[in-house]
Image (cartoon, rainbow over all chains, first blue to last red; front, top):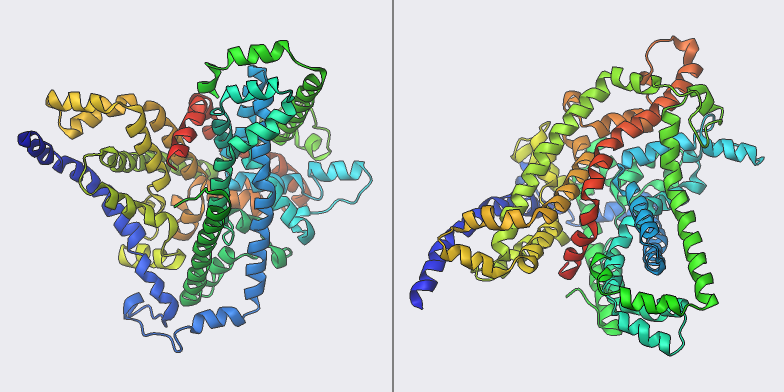
Length: 305
Length: 310
């Protein structure tokens, strides 16, 4: 059969030709910036470029500078707190939604709920934050109308630091709860109905079926999603925080990604410092992923690698 | 859900006939909870729509709650008169079309060869594509590469290419090619003399419409809704996508949407701007929500493929 193999290999050149363009894209836009992280250890001069610039003295200068700046604890604290809260609320709720949806017998109702809860996922962050700004406008917003009606004092809520986290997390849950539940709905569809049958014969009611059969059955998916999410514990999406940020809520809304953007591209051109912070950030995220993965391997046998 | 509904009826039926009172109560509670949740999700959207069709005074006065008051199209007319918004719309549509086409093209070209088990070096290439999912150069190295080395500042190419292919989507597509299309079909085509490229075009692609739709939607929504790359790479306002103009109007409270009136009229302008903003929200979201019903039935399928080997 030698000639068949020969022919197959001969034809394979077309596969490699197809791969050429995507692989070049990966190389240019994913791999070429990677060595650029040496900028974190350098004293950048635009004339000499990233690689020609001399090293900073000492080499950890920018890391030290970040560590000693007042922004260190503020940005890390805010980032961690914000993503922790998002995880705390945003992670279990889609699972709960999927479990509840699975209990509904009426297909039409089930489909309606599903399709409606997906919709907010398709709104852009700008529109979402714009809607929130309109709703909470002190003079015109519907939220403040309701508060007035209930006897409270209206406020420009987007500028109140105390509610920033609530608004951020709440709007995130509102937007993504339905969408995030899809994966669990898919997992629930794979639960063996015989398990329910036998549990029923043993006298389980539906609540118990949900709690003791459905939930454990989708546990592997849950754990995988938890591991993946914990890799983002020190990165809050830039787009939404940046839009919700204003001078008044800066103390709670300044996160690493917005700080990195502010000190580099927006105003003071501190490219080295911002690269150093970015590097620090992605190292912490990678470490989190590894740690959570190994913990999960120990306790539950579910792992990414 | 769909794959399960076929083998469930027998089990369901036997359940139904033996439902206890507790089970019925449980289901009622579940339905009520879900109904409340659905209401909280739909109401803000519904409010935006009715407010956009209402008279500014009524909206600002808090009279618009269930139905639009003094129905008017004024708000939308103002939007269409706004040159910036229309420019942004046009730009975003072009970006959407070019971007989605380029991403899909690259994703398919990457996913198809990697779906072939007989491809030499497949695992190595997979690793090469997966590493960027976990580690990247970061904001500034990428920025310097794009603007200095490649010289793409203030160009749509930067916005399109920096976002680029998502490895996650590529893996979904690859898994689909591997698991949903029998390999025998490809073999048969090859025996009949199809080259790999011909096999891709005549056999694989026609059978992959659902997954192409889902991934095209992912890409399209991503392009339409993102603003960050445009914010850092595009300085020329003529090239701005819609989201950047929206940011100016919705978030930075730029009142220039309402033309006419002098400074003494600020209060009235602010009031008018409020309802116009609602109309803008609707207009900006419509393109994505229009595609949605057509592709919605593929969602669960798409995610399921992804979760097999995600």
